[in-house]
Structure formats: C-alpha cells, structure tokens
Length: 202
Ligand code: ZN
Image (tube, rainbow, N blue to C red; front, side, top):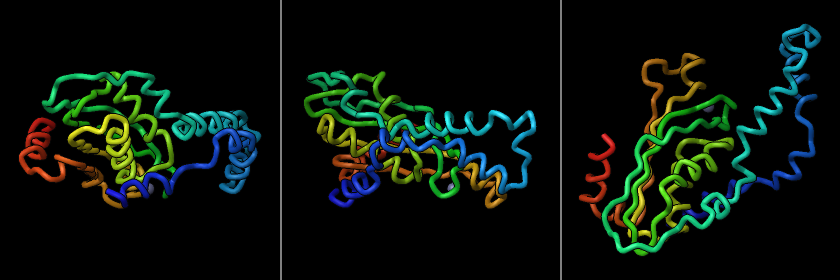
C-alpha cells in the first residue's frame, strides 16, 4: 500500500501553469525540420500550432484537480454490495514513445460509507489518462484515488489497452494488448471478491 502511494506522488508534474508559458510550436517545427520536412509547405504550415494544442489537451490531466472533478459527488449510503462500472473508454500517451495507447478501464469497489457519483468515474479516468503515462501506473493511480476519496472496503481496477508503440513499430503486432490490474483492500485480500469482479467484467 505504501509503495503504491509513493508511485502516485513521484510523478506529480510541475505546475501546468509554468509549463504552459513555454511555447511548444517552435520545438515541433524543429522536429519537423530534423525529419527533413519542408516546414513551409502548405500541409505543414500550421502543424506546429496544431500539435501544440493537441499535446496540451492530451496532457491536460496534469492540471486537473481530483476534488474539483468529483465536485461533491460523494454520497453517504447504506450499501455494501460491489459497485462496478465496465468499459470506461480511455485514450492516453505512452511516456516512452509519446505514442497513444488506448482501451478500456473497469472499476469496482465495495462502499464502506460513501459512493462516488457514477458519471464521475469516467472523468476520474481521464484525469490520469490525459498525461504521459505507463499503463501500470495509470491503473494504480485510479485505484489509489478512489481509495483516498471514499475509503471503500476495497477497490479493483482492470485496464485493457493496445499500444501504438508496439503496433506501429512492429514489435508485437499479434499480441499488442496488455492487461493491468490494481487491487486494494478486499479485492486484494479476498479471492471471492476478486473473482466476482473478474467474472463480471468478462
Ligand atoms: Zn511506448
């Protein structure tokens, strides 16, 4: 548990406000030139600015505040059955190649006293997907954040993803899908709970 928390904190990015002051477009132009492209040709004329906007959006999770995203949608309940949300779509970028990886996240938890509004779970996923990521860490961060927000009896997160860095570079075209999971509390300690989750997301 402690090591999970440390993982989350290590990647805390520098303030997005500071980063946003450094324009990216000239750097993208340099990359294009380094690739031997003619940056003056029509198709590329506005590409640096477009890439900058795209990168800002794809990393906008750094500037998102989990508390604001959830925005009070934490409700006291008398309910102790498993809450599951399957097939939450996500799109992220691998930090090793700056290429997309994308897929689905399945989230489950057993409430202790509180639940999170269901519509907030996909937004929580986006907070961590819209960053430079590795799949394992993103999966852990989602689980850890739910743990911290509502202190459930347990939380499980499974992430199924395909990675462009593997698909496009021909590293592993046939088996480019990767599955990661993070199990905390009852999902880690009780096999029946974990199995119930696994059978429900199958
Ligand atoms: Zn990669």
